[in-house]
Image 1 (cartoon, rainbow, N blue to C red):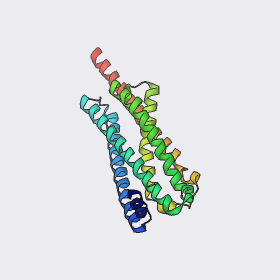
Image 2 (tube, rainbow, N blue to C red):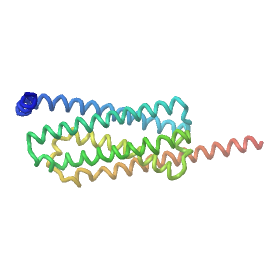
Image 3 (tube, rainbow, N blue to C red):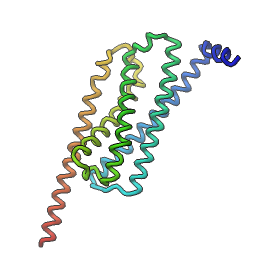
Length: 215
């Protein structure tokens, strides 16, 4: 009886449209929450970098809370996204999976998921231990900056693809992702310049303090 009811609901086009609308709304809210948290975190990191501020216990707890919230939002995106794909598959058939925009979104979300694992297991613990991006070793600092750039660009790019309905079937997968690596590299180079300037300023301040102490 229950299976028959479910099958009849799945065949009801009006019900499926309302179901898809509700799931898309959840998907959109999860994306907005994640982007807001990521941008807040990135802006705070750049600000601390410029001011050469060390992480406090409160900052570390806040970073862990942000990371947990982003993971929850990412899980919500995966679940709601799979449901949306399932609904559209029932409506359009297997040809739906050939949509380059859908393929691009899946690739970026997979990148975000892997990047999130790196951030949680490697970058965040290293930052908490070092107290500052500047205090990290070269390899750890490069990884932190790359993961941060990848995260910020990927969330914004995924959001752009999500709202870009006119992009569907109009461009190939390679064309849709053409700007993606370029933006990641530009973000990484920007962080590299900011870090270099902060280290230079820190070195000058240290020299001035040493001169003042000698006098």
